Image (cartoon, rainbow, N blue to C red):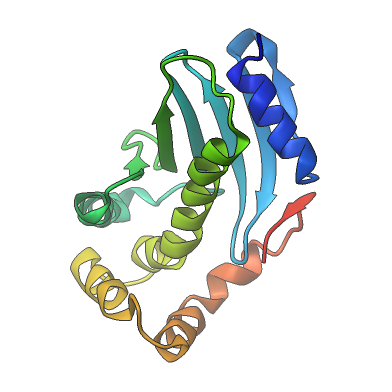
Amino acid sequence: MRTSIDTIKAFLHENDLHFMHVPEHDALILDFHLREVHCKVFVRDLGTFVVVDVKLPCMMPAHRRPQVAELATRINFGNRVGRVDLDWSDGEVQVHSAIPTVEPLQCEQTFQQVFDGCLGMTQHYFATIMAVAYGETTAATAYAKLDQNNGASEEPQKAADEETETHDTRMAVRAPNTVH
């Protein structure tokens, strides 16, 4: 019988996405480059869930972690699927999404929805998280701007991109897996 990891590997192969398989943890690891961020993607089969975690490439400064934690709470409160997690001890931020599996995942399209959703969430919130972590923006202000920009024209997004331009240049390294 085909396992969930077999199904996920088939999806990744079909889409020319390079990964490393870690059989002892039933996990796959990908280096991924989104429009603004190079990140590590971890895909795990936990038996009853298939989990996708995207680890952001930098740690949040200790003095800004309360604001980043507040932003994560605001983001998570409005999300139906997926969440943003902050590890308070070291400042690591992860974007997390999962799908329950009663039996091994057989449909690549089902995995694609979780995978794309998690990467999309990362792309959507990255600039805002960085603005709070490394700028003077409060979580409330950043989230309000984000909320105003949902469904709006590209002009507000262009302004947000310009506001975080200094963060983008630090992460210009290309990875084998690239999405624009």
